[in-house]
Length: 365
Image 1 (cartoon, rainbow, N blue to C red):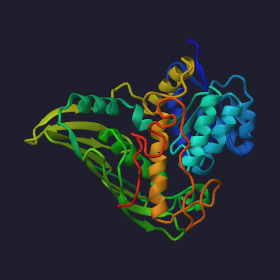
Image 2: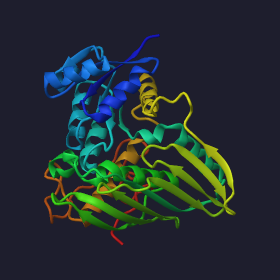
Image 3: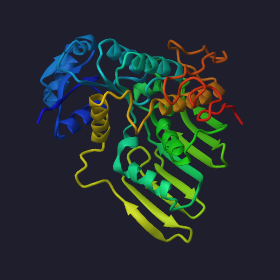
């Protein structure tokens, strides 16, 4: 079998999990890894049996063997490296969050579409079979129309230096909050109409914990609780008029159970026994998109990436939390950015445009 060659930018924990996964996935190989130093890249390469190690990201992007780049660096440079991939005509899968705000993400996504290069967000939970089953249950109307969703995610990550630094796009919202938010939006089938929230900052100014209330245009409601200060139960519950759906593992689904309105369990679903880690599915989807010359995956479309980032921008604006990074307004300054429409389904006047059907105006309730 011809193996699909992956290049990894970054040598952190998630890069290691992905490398280990791809080493066990038929039809794929990690051909190269790059870090900011040769020593760090070589250490990673030795650990995960990667044949080539580069001491700069630019060197890896010149490697003609690489067919897909996986970006696994800190939040602050995801978009910058994604643009470098497009310049090098290298398809890229970008670790979530795609960037630290919607303005930088949208520019890169539009640039990739203009240059006919695949780019996607590695929101891995969107690709796993448990979430495929969730889509089927909701579509079948097993629990009736969805009325309310609760989703929590929290870990004690106070000692994670990168999460404490505003200059790296740190905080609970971008690293953890993106999981319950994308789960809620998937279950609701649309973006929130408004939001109300409370946030507890840490000493560096980034958000340590938040509670977010969200009403939706068609009458649904949702609550997300996110924390990097303490462990939470990490569950998502979707309440319908005829029952509920319980998902264990908001950021790493381990089970899905369906209950009728009397509380009787009527369905359950677990990850397949053949599943490696769950990270493999996003690479299978990305490979298919690259081979068929599609600009995005079906499971995580560009419009969804930008919509959720826009929502997080709005949240941070109400908290007066801005990062000292390009494209960010200064603290206390009104955010001048509006997402730039992307061609296709989210084109001008479409759901990606301000006030479009998929992106209603967001204001703090």
